[in-house]
Image (tube, rainbow, N blue to C red; front, side, top):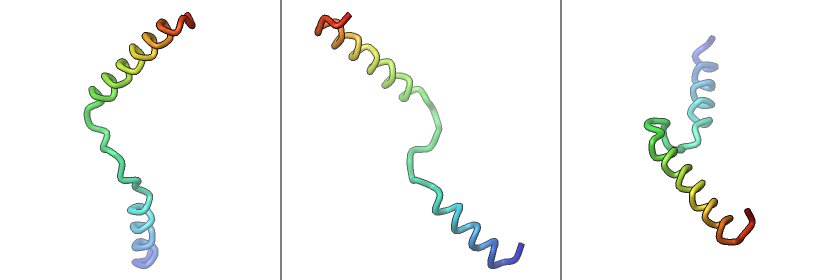
Length: 50
């Protein structure tokens, strides 16, 4: 690998990042998911769909 191709590859790797949140603790993601499930279940029950 030449220096030019290595620099081009490093640039492509940097561009591939989306800038989203890091995958650290998934606790908040689980809490938000279960809160959505509970709210959705309450909505379905109130509308009489189940």
